[in-house]
Amino acid sequence: MRARLLTVAIAIPLLAACQKSPRERLQGKWRGVSVERLSGAQAKSAEGWARQTTIEFSGADVTVALPAEAPQKGTYSVAKVEGDHVTVHFKRADKTHDDAAEFQFTQDGKLVWSLGSADVVMTKAVD
Image (cartoon, rainbow, N blue to C red; front, top):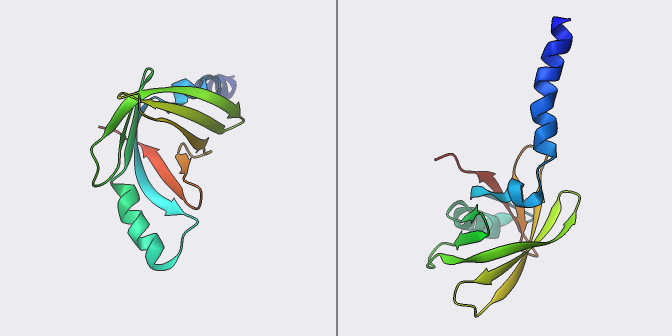
């Protein structure tokens, strides 16, 4: 009986996490930890860039901080969801750009930001 209760106690939070919407799953600050699909010197340079990159989702607001650039602030909306793949539209605060970005949630809790020829792997920041 105790084993069943323990199984249920563990399963309920896991099921609740699966029920979160893509917008809820994006919330928080994400930090780059690595780059995939690159090799050699290009990969090493990109790794340093990725580790200085953050994206913070807060409600409908987003801040994207890239190395050597001022953080870009604006709003976002989830445009498309296909399983763990999410397309997000960013609207910059200055209203000059409307950009799309592709993300994928991984089984181990990471977020992968697809940049075409490379992917930035991100983890949720714990500040």
